Length: 406
Image (cartoon, rainbow, N blue to C red; front, side):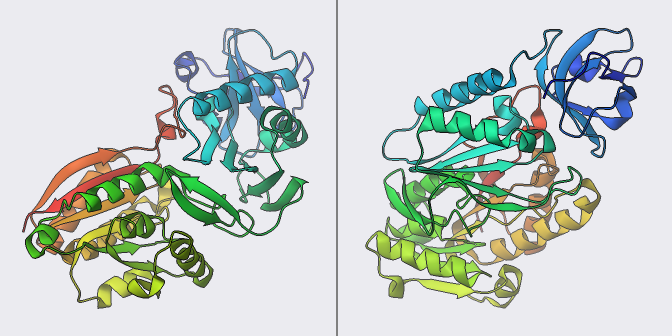
């Protein structure tokens, strides 16, 4: 990982403002030239046009993000293993202060938010699942595994890295260290879940929705919709893009009757297993294996609570218009099914959809659904998914709680 003294990335005149503001990404348009022959993933120094060393980061000649900074300032990173140990130790210590034995599934490392661009580490009980989103972090794979073994003493470490054409990385899935197969049981604020860390989506469970799942449970327990209060019965909850049924499970444990809609047979099977794991009768609930858009178009029932947690409809900026229409359509359909006084929890995990745009999309959806709607709350990602104040792109999860007045 050491670089020669002649290798460096040099910014164009006046292109150092974002680095002075401690933003960790240097885009290709800001680079005047590259000296030496750095390889993809190599750690190289960054200089401004006047020759001042401004930091050190992962270089990738094929990515629009030409440099991802690990450290700011003129001091080089002396020993990369020690650097990784210190950053990983700090990240784990932060989470240890906030989570107890009632929550055994936690994100331990969240990329740029923990000063480790391109690295994700999720803990599922005794199993760690890692993702390498950048070629620089992928080159440090063995050092990171060794550091995690010393720091966390896991039973096994599993890799679930997605493919990235821009970074030049193929998808990687398998056990990096230790022995493990099948599912792992975890606790989330006392609720039991089976998690498939080998074949499941992402790293196995959407940990960033932990707080929202708890919120749904609390709202159901308190009977916060007018419909349930008026009729004196448990809430009817519809959960679209339900995956392994997390929102449905949290609501059902508080007495809701739930309908879970997802395209995956495997996810629906795991959802039903999660209900059984918590002593719930699956026959009392519905598990619909279907496309959420198609199912909502055909549905004629009414619900007290609707949850919409779709995949990212906007993964790249060129698809923003198309993705915005998809968000509008799914929310219009969801609003249409709510009883007066009903609640909609709706989410976007698209980093390119900011808060202002998402609210405008919801406005358009409400207008087309011809519903009068209140905003009761806005929620970002949980505490184990921090983002740097200097890197607002790290705030990707946007959630609105809406109430249909009439």
